[in-house]
Amino acid sequence: MNQKVRKAVFPAGGLGTRFLPATKVIPKEMLALVDKPVIQYGVEEAINSGIEHIIIITGRGKGAMEDHFDHSYELDATLERRGKTELLAVSKGVSSLARISYVRQKEPLGLGHAVLCAKELVGGEPFAVILPDDVIDAEVPCLKQMIDIFDEKGGSVIATATVEGPAISAYGCLAGAMDKQNPRIFNTTGMVEKPKFEEAPSKQAIIGRYILTPRIFALLEETKPGAGGEIQLTDGIRALLKEEKIYGYTFEGKRYDVGDKFGMLEATVEFALKREDFGERFREYLKGLKL
Ligand code: G1P
Image (cartoon, rainbow, N blue to C red; front, top):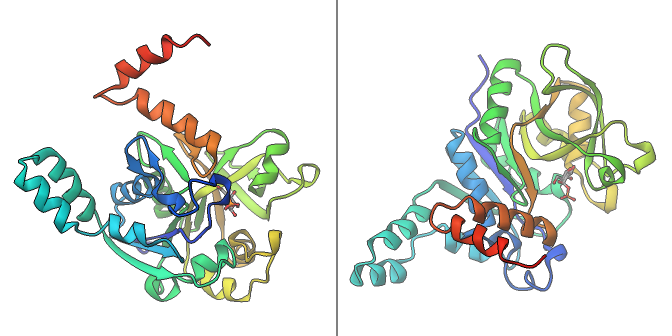
């Protein structure tokens, strides 16, 4: 029986330069997708997948995230006084969502280094990593789908999607072959971070969800700076591959890169159209635009 996946690490120390000037003061994880900060989508996905403890890796200027998931006495007292019970439930709901711990990444040395910052809090058990920039809309939460594969197979699991053409150079890319029994599983034999298009070993791009065994921490400690001069998670996982099985997993659902301006616009339109309270009104508005 595999150990249960109980903890999820959220690397959130990055500078968010792709979204300047909005992210000069506001953490990119706090930008609103319709009416909810980006990071809350990931936290809710984790909770809905059975995760009990969230570990957020923060950095300088990221304090708004801690305030967001904390009680807001002034706001709650004011809403109560004004009889705004629905809004009060929203505010209280956020602060009671999950058990959250914060670890500060003092220097932005890369994604692998950010995950390594969670070593003490994770301890010796398998854990999830969620990159909050990747918002995934799915009927069954993406992380839940991956935990089911982990429970079945026992090896680390990485979310993947097929990426055509030169766009693969923006991702980690897996080498290996599709499983004969389950076409959603990619039996991984190698991986490379941000390959040149001509050198990409497949079209299987790494998407920001991972289930990893704790052995990764010792390997990340030895990982040297790679692509972009950063300590890359992909390089640490490649070392893990020499010792353990790793599976790529084509999840069911749609991923949006909301750390990117265009990705955020796509997600905003599609999430707004699905809203019960104003989706219809928004659809009519879009139809009325002379495009
Ligand atoms: C990170 C990972 C990369 C992965 C990507 C998914 O890159 O290093 O392997 O494909 O997330 O979003 P970043 O987008 O932080 O450069």
